[in-house]
Amino acid sequence: MLNKTDLSQIQKAVRTETKQIVKQELTPLKKDVKTLKSGVLGMKRTMGVMLDVLDREDVTIRKRVERLEEHAGISSQ
Image (tube, rainbow, N blue to C red):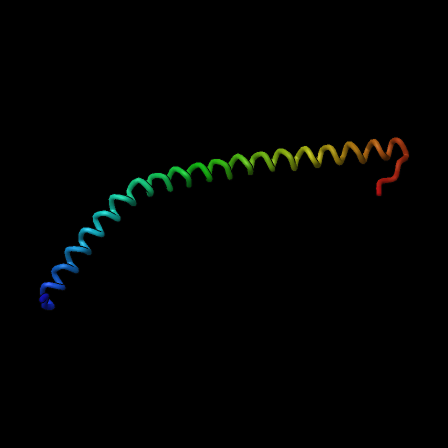
């Protein structure tokens, strides 16, 4: 029959092995997460630039349409 000391030693050995296995499994995952983060940040920057350009073009087109409507005597709704 196992006593408290034996159970404590078994528990300690299991913890040590579990920590090593988890560490080995997490290392590649950390690299993948880092890669994903950098990819997402790049996409955010690209989307920000695209939205800025589209907003500027939208304002320009609105101004042109307003001038055309004014010139043609068409009222905008």
